[in-house]
Image (cartoon, rainbow, N blue to C red; front, side, top):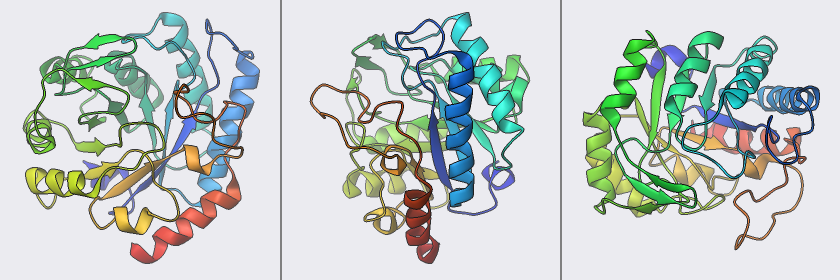
Length: 275
């Protein structure tokens, strides 16, 4: 399925983090959300990324399943943005709302969704989230979204495992349960995956199964990460502004910070030779 989505075997997926959306503190209005998000998407495409994933990153506190106001806002924004960029688009509805993500993708024509909790049950600051890959696949089939790929995190960041086991076991189950790709993160936003974890996942998933690094990539470690993974999802390090406190902040940069064309181009230049 991924060969139909991307024009390269090692795709770089840029992140568009929406500002706080309708119903959340700091919501700047839907027009401001669109201006900011559209500008970020255009910068990512101009900088050379292969795809973009859009998420409600600043809707804090998160909920496992979002309300209709979030679905309405994200559908509107993604639909408009998709008409202004040509790279494939993905959807992530935090914290783990695969139903809304699939629905938005189906309506807007997005190509993939991210599912943070697929086979690993976890405890987060927002409560326990129980894995149920069968329900994820059943809902995709129910709305006839079989052409929308599932990018499944394993042992996802910002969470404590409830069903403790090795990363290799999580990777193997995610493949068996129907993920189209798996994502491996560090423990927190801005932390890169451990190379030993990446090696474990590769051995468990097989040499050809798509694995993505989902956090902590930058121009200094991108080439090393691509020795182990098929692609990278990148967001925070491409933004303007300084890093905020890692101790208290879920989001290391304020939503007002923009995607930097210069940083994006520098990152893609590093990646180019490895690919």
